Length: 164
Image 1 (cartoon, rainbow, N blue to C red):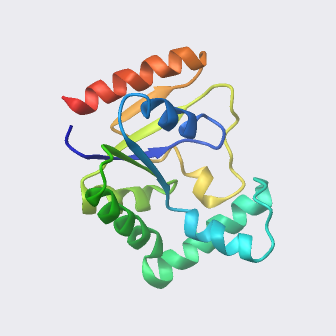
Image 2: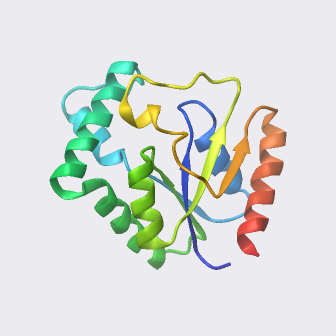
Image 3: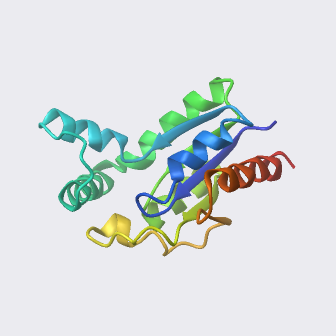
């Protein structure tokens, strides 16, 4: 299998990480998020990892500052991509919320895009990053409205599609 990079997005709680885990049953995957460096910063200041509107807003704002300052999120993803190229993994999933940041990664490393949706989850609008999830024209959209078994079937089909 040729190595593939997939920018994955969706509102909090729709099952993005679950989907990546299920894809891992059929391919070797690495799961990266462009927000990880900013989570590390918040942990160092005493954040306990709780996903609240306040912490989501803080993470979004830290990321926006880094985008303006040094294009930090894209640089972070490119570094992870270079590590991925040297690994034995087949698929690198990159979590990115902001449409302009998705476009940068798509343009720089020829990534595919995937949106995970779920009618069971309310859209998060408390910060700029989460509010803009639907403002991108994704290559693929997968609905997570059924059972875990149904999502696994979709994960297996998605891997087959990537292999073509």
